[in-house]
Length: 240
Image 1 (spheres, helix red, strand yellow):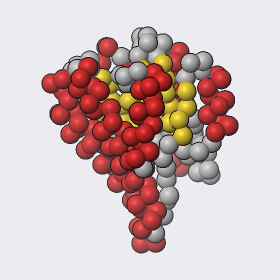
Image 2 (cartoon, rainbow, N blue to C red):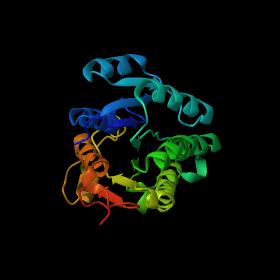
Image 3 (cartoon, rainbow, N blue to C red):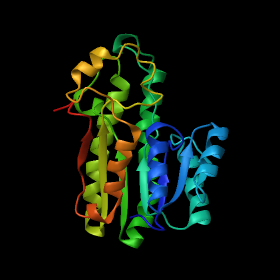
Image 4 (cartoon, rainbow, N blue to C red):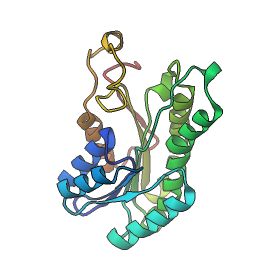
């Protein structure tokens, strides 16, 4: 489905990002993944996905993103698919949230996506094709107590998606967002008693990372060539 297409996945060694890398690789893509710091995990993923390569990069650092995209171009060639998955949480009620925690979450989750899109943008323009997939969240659609920073970053990502989609549509480039609900990842394993959360989900379970990856695979494929500016909820009905 993605044979020989070059895909860049940020936050690619854990949870949803890891599942997307595995799914894209299984479907023929050549995968370059960005990660924040765990070199052992990155090396393990390179071994598990032959032909893939990891690049350590803080997506909030514009200069670092520019350098790593140049390196990826030398190693792989022109990028055809960009998945912005890198993200973090620093939860606290708004009254007690430190400014640095608010800013850091926006810098990584939202500004980081802007940095990577800006680097891929001229490549997509020149080739008159490309896929951008931004991993947002239902928290960006409905908000979540204690997550004013995270929810703001994910809502901003939806606005970024729609604006970029309008800018690039005439060049054959699509830009869409996926809004997962609760997913079985490191980010949700420490939530404690999940019974109240499960009761709020019509399907009564968390998503598996592979289910988010399947949505990303569809949006990256030729079958989704006429879909752009869309926000695809994969949330078990949570935000209906």
